[in-house]
Image 1: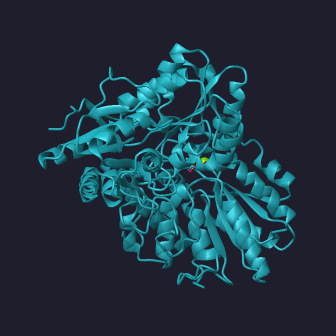
Image 2: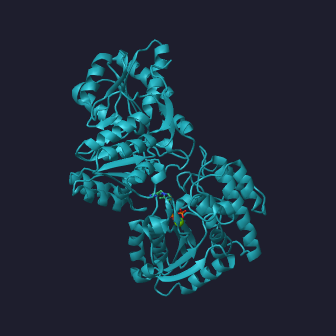
Length: 283
Length: 320
Ligand SMILES: Cc1ncc(C[n+]2csc(CCOP(=O)(O)OP(=O)(O)O)c2C)c(N)n1
Ligand SMILES: [Mg+2]
């Protein structure tokens, strides 16, 4: 396992990952910067502090923590964090969404990109896969953690609730799920499209241990993940309701759903990069 | 020179958008549903004019299909809108039981079909939808070729009673079907008369077939181009009449070779008039991210591939 980074180091990595995200979507003029930027701090905390994982990459990951991205459209942040963790060369980020690339628009195993264990992109499926992997770990007597991230709009999919019902009933207490609670989806605010209402009450009613956190505050995320781990092993899966700001780190991408899936033009790229310090070197 | 003039360029999904508005204006029973993709499906104009006849269901396609089925009970004509992948594979059993088997008048309108959706990649690029939908008893399957034909098809299906799968796409492509050209569900449209080979194309591949005709003509080959916008029910008569003259066929579609238009044509030929046929289609593979034109080339779906297939079909005919 890689050494745990300090909070200052984590923040520096997050700044570079945000630069990568806007540069990647600008380069192919497609992709999803909003949710990627909003979840950057969480990904960095997971991969550079919380998770026990090996960038040499073994699909079965025995004895390692696992992470599944259910809201696959935020692939830019996933790819950048995997690359900086050492799963594949950082310069490969330049191929994102281009023909013959391993960095598909949505995460895929088909091209064998190290770090990816399941395809995602069609929403609502990731928690079921995470449950399966957690069941496999239990059979293997491996008490590592299984993490899964979902979108809040994604909660509108019925399959999410099939999975939500299963996990507590099967006492999957090494499963730590997080919802990117940014209040936005493609057509507008989730509250207007199909209101999620009281997510805490819903998950508690299904039998989850529920915590809430601020996903754009590094100390807050680390504390929440520590809390989640401390709640593990007590017969219940843990749900981390994580408030984020879509577009976090780039002021003009924040405050609405508009940058869910739009690429910046040249001027917007320059403006965004002006707000994000280059800490590890651009790819 | 191709036999058709390019009248402009637009995406077929925009043809759906204007057609939906028109259908809504013509019939107050036309209603629309969407699963968080209003902009991508170009449904804004309908929603603006008929807000009370629009239902935003959120990211819940299975629920959308069930609600659409229910809306028909009471005489509504629901048009569902989402990407082709989430309109078919995602909700196959909901369509099968609540719409097809129950014989409900739902119009399943599916954008971003095929590899030409581009950068989003294989998770979204469905290439199996025509097959899945045509296998359902009673389902009509239509894949129009340009903006004008998609508008025509959208208006036409509102007037037709029964479940329909309407498939269209994302990229801006040439408009070449004149507004006054006929559109009749189940009736093939002959675009170019020819004697040496029949090219049956659907969707985005129809324009490629028109381009291929020009290249073949320069080689001294006379190709007949037939636009099969309705894959089911298939216009068998048009197909058999054409091959009776040309003696060989090429099918062209942005879909898997397994289960698409080509297989429907092969079935017709095998049962009525066995003749050489070549497929222009995706050969048992998933797509990938990239620019539409690059993907059309890599997956064997452009005019050059149609030309190659036509030459092969003619060669097989001569060797018979
Ligand atoms: C099954 C399915 N339906 C629709 C889509 C299209 N789609 C992609 S992202 C998205 C919105 C997701 O909202 P949310 O989970 O809140 O993610 P955010 O916009 O916050 O990044 C939709 C509808 C999809 N990818 N999968
Ligand atoms: Mg959201």
